[in-house]
Length: 107
Image (cartoon, rainbow, N blue to C red):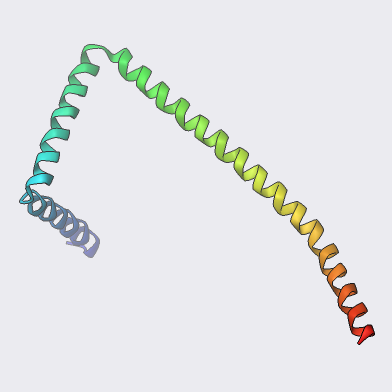
């Protein structure tokens, strides 16, 4: 057996043991049971009416699209401000240098 196969096998065994140990914790066990029931109910519901699944997927895709649009707008705004800052920074540095020179001459 190659090392790669052993690694995968041991990872699966470790994950299974971890999952079993976590089920000793009652709140975790209750949550797993509750989520299992919800998944089962949803699966039955989608099997009876596949259009519900299609509609939910479309809604999620639209939510993701809106989020991407918002993030794109935010990135564009930040980029615009960064470009403005890049343009004004040399001017500000020059102004500071001039002010420093004038105060140095007075002393």
